[in-house]
Each structure stands twice: as structure tokens, then as C-alpha cells.
Length: 148
Ligand code: SF4
Image (cartoon, rainbow, N blue to C red; front, top):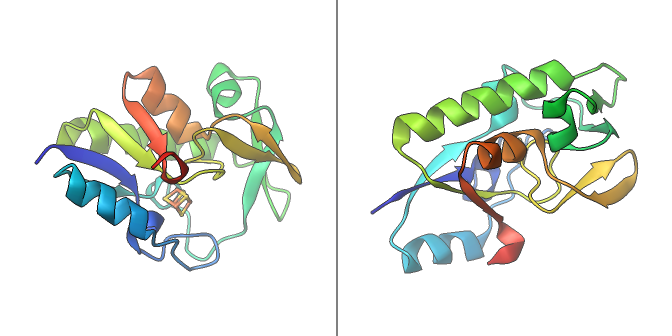
């Protein structure tokens, strides 16, 4: 059963900023169909953030731009969270390597986990979260629950 990194909230863990989960039955079906072992990760918790916590969004760019040094993330209290999100992405990558994960299934539109879309302010734009961008840079194949 090969390992796959999965956003913890999709597996029913209450890791979201609002203290809730986003359990997704399609994710469980996919894991069973493909005989995959999920490795739950929450990049924001791995960065040391509390749960619940203020929601965060991109203020500039997306995860790829953040890693390039030209994007930024802010939270609802207007604190710059960019470095914290980079730290969470790095910790997530460490777990991927420790567990031998070559693929990841992440929550769409999160500033950490988004795969195809993220929030820039109040708008949804094409882009990826910070952890997703780092995992892809490091060669993992990443999809979202909306790809299933
Ligand atoms: S950072 Fe990712 S795993 Fe954590 S709550 Fe947000 S979407 Fe879920």
C-alpha cells in the first residue's frame, strides 16, 4: 500500500482555521480503490499555528510566488504570515520524505494546500498554496479532492 500525503482536514481531522474538518467521502473511496495509505498533514498546524486560528489569504501572488520571494500571505488580523506558511510547507515536505510519499492529495483553495485555485483577497484566482507549490517543486505529483 503506497503512502500518499493527504490534507488532514479531508480525512476528518479538525485542523481547519475554524476548528472544523472537511471530511470528503470521495477521498476515502479513492484511497480504497487505489490501495493507498494516507499520511495526514496540516501544513498550518505543522507551522505551529493554533486551531482555531484567524483565516489567511494571499495578499500578493500565490504559493509559487511566495517561494520565489514575490508573494505574501496575510491573516484576518492583518498579520503577515508569509514566513509561517513557508515553514509549514517545509515541515510538510519533511514528512513526505520521511514516509516516502511521491504523491499528495490536497484541499483546494487553501492558502497552504490549494492545488489549482487560491484566494487573493476576496477573489478566487488560478494558483496554488504554499505547501502545494513546494511539494511540486520537489517532484511530488499533487492533485486536489476536486480532481477525483
Ligand atoms: S492547511 Fe491544509 S490540511 Fe490544514 S486545515 Fe488548511 S486545507 Fe486542511
